[in-house]
Image 1 (spheres, rainbow, N blue to C red):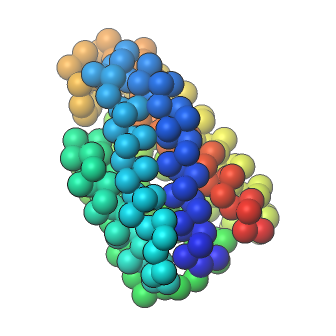
Image 2 (image 1 turned 90 degrees about the vertical axis):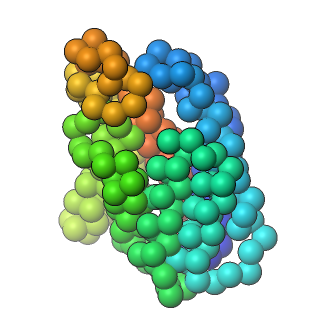
Length: 210
């Protein structure tokens, strides 16, 4: 997989975030201020548009460019966090012009690290991370067991969905939901729902390159 995969994945990310904008707004309106759907649709669209026609072959530079564009387009807390994911992934893939299918999990883990480093969030704190980390862990386990990439990504999607549902029961530590205290436990985190959408976009994009 080369730069065309990165560009296509961002295209699918942009498409699904626009398509599911109202869904994410609805989820966020329960625990936050309802702007997450707009932030994600505008942010991922900006990230894609920044590299859509790029001839850059360095995967790291492509991801870094996407992250900077997203950061500028949606300079909110969540927009900055998600942009930081792209920037960290860009650093991890600097100088690489191709990646094998197993490195998809590496890319996502670098993305998660960027978000965690910027937001100081850890697993179990009712955030986006609680959707993405289970997906990555499932993919890593699948690849270790030698399964094909379709199965690995499907396992990742299932992990993200399970992670999203598991946020009901967690105490919110970050963001507006944290102001609810114990009352936040009954709510599912909309950021974790975004992780599920990211995995759905990945599944769609990878299928084109197999």
